[in-house]
Image 1: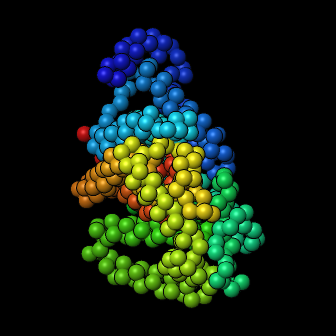
Image 2: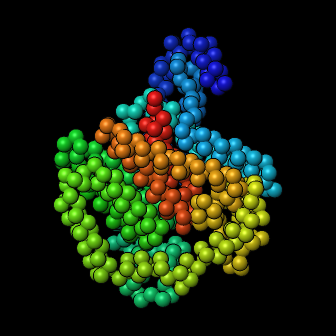
Image 3: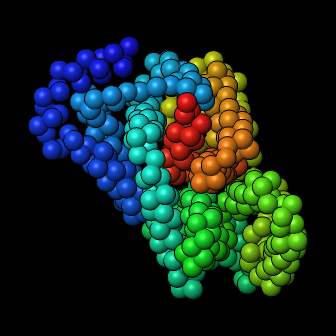
Length: 436
């Protein structure tokens, strides 16, 4: 239906398109707008980043109305996203706090419009994918450098970011946070995790093209970003990074294990030895990692357990349609369920948050999207003969999986700095997995 409408308007505006320099170069404007979203994410507020994303969506809508042959399609895992969107609309109108829920809905709508826009753009401009991957890599590196310098300047905590009650002074970590707003080390950790696979992709493509020096430069940038992830002290980011590295190792080993078995064994041994040395020599990092297993003995863990318990009760009472989208909406309802002294902006778990906000069927749709995206990506990786495409699909898959792992224990998934990179990675999957 929509494509028929677009075809009609394209025919009616054909003369305008032929005589308009702007319309003929609409893809160039979309290219700049998408790039601006990633650059602005490093230092601007959420509202500014969201406005840039809406510009991308507006330009894409103009393209659909005027550019001959432009159209939309929905295939593969995108059907699950469509179902998810329909369910959150129903949840919106079923919310008792419609105003707050509507604000949350507009944010989600902005993210999904950005996703649709990047899919439409990349289908016609696949050659731009390496550029955007490189741009994301440079944006990450700028934050990694800032975080690296913050570590040596021993920046002070802006809020209580770690439980120091059971730590010696030498075990207290300086947690870096970069320039992302609002300043938070968990946000920086999540941002570096979602974008790290872009550095994997740039490193792999350079070596594949036998551009050794370029590959070594990107490899150094990758290592710098991984070091900064450790410096954030974000334990969810640690888990996500290890998941991403293991997934990258497994995918590459599928193709190169028989040829480079000794090299892989050496890398495994070297990584284990390096991690052992770091844990032995760095007491603050060792204490931070081991606190993951402290359970209730760590105040941060205990806080999350309390939030999980309250959120599960919220879901039980609102299992069908949920309470509505948005952190403001969540906070208002959560006040009825929270334990005294444990206020929260979200459920600190992506899947639990989805269930609480939009109900059980929205959770099923979201899980369907996630599982089908992984399944189709793995099929593509192991069946395709195009190495460059395999690299980009692998990077996007690693990003999506890493974000979901981090989101099991944190709330930063819903920040725009992560969301726009996340949906860009999903759009890469859509472009390659849904091709005829």
